[in-house]
Amino acid sequence: MALGIKKGRLLAFAGILVGALALPFAVRDPYVIGIVNFIVTYSILCLGLNLILGYTGLLSLGHAAFYGIGAYTTAILMTRHGFSFVPALILSGVLALFFGFLLGLPTRKVRGDYYCLLTIAFGEIFRLVTQAWIGFTGGAMGIVGIPIPEVLGWKIQTEIDFYFLGLALLGFTYGTLSLLTRSKFGRAFVAIREDELAASVMGINTPMYKILTFSIGSLYAGLAGSYLAVYQTTVTPSNFRLEESCLMIIMVIVGGMGSLAATFLGVTVMAVAIEFFRPLPEYRLLIIGMIMILVLLFRPQGLLGASAFKD
Image 1: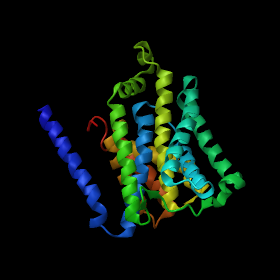
Image 2: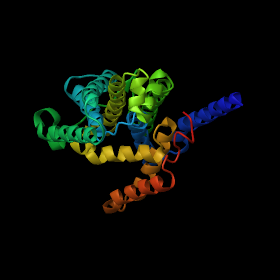
Image 3: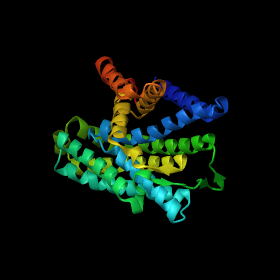
C-alpha cells in the first residue's frame, strides 16, 4: 500500500515537472507567461512564509521587507558595483537571512499579537527608509536600468528565459524546504506550533528554532526579491508595501498552512483572481478578502491543507 502511494506521488511529480517544462512552449502568449512568472515569484515567497506561519505558527506581516531587501541588494550590486547576477543573488539571500535573524531574536521575549505588530513596524520602517534615502535607494523613483542577468553564459532576456530561471529558483526552494520539513527540524517546528510549552518540556530549544525558522523563511524572500529585480529591471518602494505582505499571508491560508504543496494552489488561485478582476481595481482588496473569508468558512484548513495532502 505504502509502495503504491509512493509510486503515485512520484508519477504525479514527474507529470507536474514535464508540464512545467513544456508550458512555455505550449503557451507562447507573453501575457500568460507573465502571469505564470508572477505565480512562480510568489510561490517562492509564500513557501518561505509557510515555513514561518504554517509550520512554526509565527505570524509575520513584514515578509515584503525581506523581499525588498533581496531586490534592492541585487539592484545596487548590479548597477553600481558591477556584480553579475549569481553573486548578487547569493548575497541578496544572505542579507535577507541576516535581517531575518535580527527580527527573529525578539521571539524569545515577544509573542502573539505583539510580535505581529513588531513585524508590521519593521516592514513599514523598511519602506519608509527606501523612500527617504534617495542617495542610496533612489527614493520613490527607485533604482532603474538593472542589467540583463547572465547565468553560465546564458543571457536571460525573454519572458520564457525568466520563466525557466524562476522555475529553477522555485525548484531549489521547494526541494530544500521539503528536506528541511521532513527532518527533525521540521518535526520541532510543528511541535512548537502545536504547543510551545510542551515542546520546551520535551527538550526542544524553542527560541533557537523560531529564530532559525524566521531566518530561513527570510532567505527565500531575499531570493525572490533578487529575481524580481532582474525581471522588472527596476525596483521601487511600492513593490514592498504592507498590502503585499497581507496578500502573501492570504495565499498561504487559502492554499493551506503547514503544506508546501498547498502553497502552489493558494498562489495560483489568488493570482488568477487578481488578474480576472484587474478591470475593477477599486474592488481588488474586497474581492481578495471575500475569497479568504469563503475559504475560512467552508475549508478552514485551506483548499489543500496539511490534513488533505502530506508533503
